[in-house]
Length: 376
Image (tube, rainbow, N blue to C red):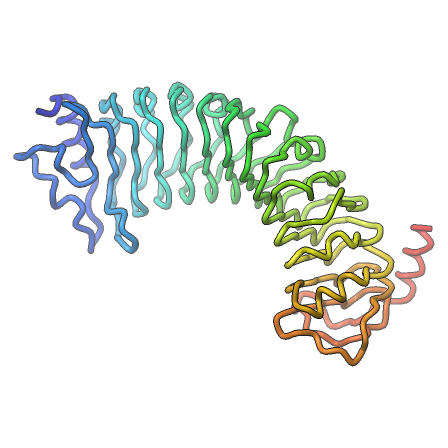
């Protein structure tokens, strides 16, 4: 028989939650029978070890109500998840009693308040997913210090302040996008074990070149829509990245990869990058270099790869480029997009550009003259 403490905890959890219309998750929760046979409840001997609240099938309406503090009574719990729904209120501080917890997932609900600092006592915790909620306040430093973390997914909340130092040497995924974090990223904030890093849509500042130089395992990097500044290390483009998003920051200087770039998508737009465009970028499928200060000729290798559809998007508008060796009679393949508007050249070909590129084809001569003198 189920331990009486766990039995009472499940009763309290049931009273605090309801099926949304269309959901029948709680239909099996009949306390005249064995709770270990309830939907989403898994037991080992007389203790609950896993609790998955709601029907995980796609399209299930989910649950409504609050998370009852009695969850903290399930002291053998190793996994706790909640399907997307309309659960509101805070994360109970009693979660700090779940010392065996390894997986904690409460995403796409309406959870509010702060992340309890007591979660930092869960030394076995590997995954935290609180994404798409309404959490606010700081990310506790105690949570960052957890030694076994592999996945931290907190995107789409209202979290603020500086991020803690993440002490786990096996952390592979850190997703903090769409929050209100501020401050700079120190060398000791992020472990070199990271493979996925998204800090987009925050208010981070300062340089990241030294931090990024250590992230040799990254396969996805998104730092877009922040206020990062400084230079980008050339070694970054040799990492096993599939996608690199650095747009809408204050990065500056030349961009010189150490070798041929094997990244599928690179977005460096809306920064302050300058100097010539490296021909090593010609192997990128989707390349956004627009709204920077690049100058000089577009490398001929770009033209070859554009015309054989190896490059699908090449956005170079709003720079100070002076030419591109392309035949005016050539037809750009339907599968490829090229935009050259508002540079220091007469457009050799007319191609459709995004509306944000404006209607002017060429920069005013005065801007180009002043810029070239300044760079000279």
